[in-house]
Image (cartoon, rainbow, N blue to C red):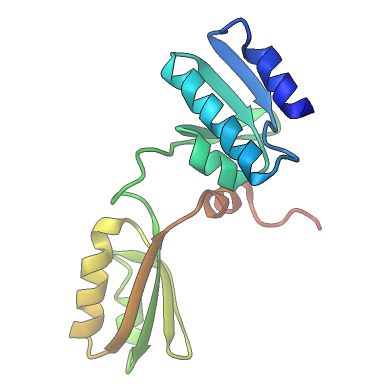
Length: 168
């Protein structure tokens, strides 16, 4: 209830700019959805809403843009709603008969390609490269049993930008 009261207080005078710190913290799923809907409504009415949160999944489904701050400086920013075929994509393929040379030859379309057992994982530079990766695997003589691609999450982006070593 306190979160909802705080949100109401922040919006009562219909400000042009709203700063929210962890607005969905401690809320149940219904409360989180209500807060997201209120934020989207404010945005539709022309307000700029700055949202601070460590719940990256909430940021991903609520925000249009994200900025990562480190030591008080913006180190990266990204337009979330524009994510499409130009975005990095994680690829997992169940393959057999894949040579090391074929894995190395994925470099024009993917980074970090590695084979563990019968599973190839890689990060495609963009969704546009996915057909080329699959064609390459087949042309190289690999037997492809499955090919799955999913866009990199905001958490993946955060870890890449901010670094995985947090001293924990």
